[in-house]
Image (cartoon, rainbow, N blue to C red):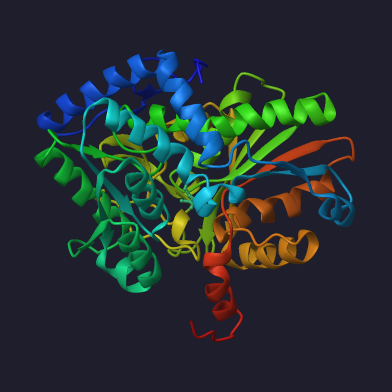
Length: 402
Ligand SMILES: *Cc1c(COP(=O)(O)O)cnc(C)c1O
């Protein structure tokens, strides 16, 4: 977690990206958070408590699994999956939430707030709030509360209050605005747990550090299993937290290719896409300078992907910098390709992986056969796919009544 990356030229900046574009009340609180975080990062007690929760609550280390069937079937590079789907609550999100909630406790906060799109980050935050005995309120676009009733109920079971946000287009971006406003209005007792490596400083750096446990482990595991580093590390990119966590400990190894997979939706040349790095332009939104899907007057465009976890109109600033420096490469995978990968990995490996993760799997399917057999791919499975089964059935024309 101590790595200093070359993209970090000054606090909160990754090249020209990042920064802190917020009202003054919020800036004071964020700077306090940044200071407490630096202190916590260097405090062995904080690190020990974090390590203990990751091991004994979240079920880490997650497995690095050799996908023998897929490797043989695709006939090229050896494929390994980093199994974040096996974490408590079923995805990588818990890594980050545990870290931020510990920081909230350290700052004496009593109330956690979070934004959520499909509900994954809201559920992870409500989970840790229950564990720590903190109040929890989750902001979720009204459209999403209607579409994801099961996750709303799940958060309520965990003791959280869910606010249906009715401003704007009533989706994730509006939920983030509402959460930022709430945080600015009540900084005394509230900690905003950001769900991805996005938003104003210190979130992108902090979330990256908390998620970097993924590559810290995978680097050790691949060395233990093969005695070498991988040739390619691949992960899906929404806001970019599982990808930056999967990349972090390889960034200083230029021989390891880093590949982020964005959701192309119906195709990058259509308006129904979420491929932010490929199609986005420089802008300022949600407190950060980064790449955003926007129209000519700078209005944020609606985004689309079959995967609710990847349809964010922006991307974390460190990814924008890694792309600009050509240290990482970003590719698009369509809905059709992701759904085919969902079915393929289920049949080949007996793993039902999240539709988000299956964007990365689809790219592995394309890439592996083009590489020699001595090459090694490590691909992150960011989450499990139980939540997606009904949607995939519907995509294939099968109606399932829940
Ligand atoms: C939220 C989510 C994502 C996307 O978020 P990132 O911050 O880009 O990692 C990907 N996969 C799963 C399973 C998720 O829940």
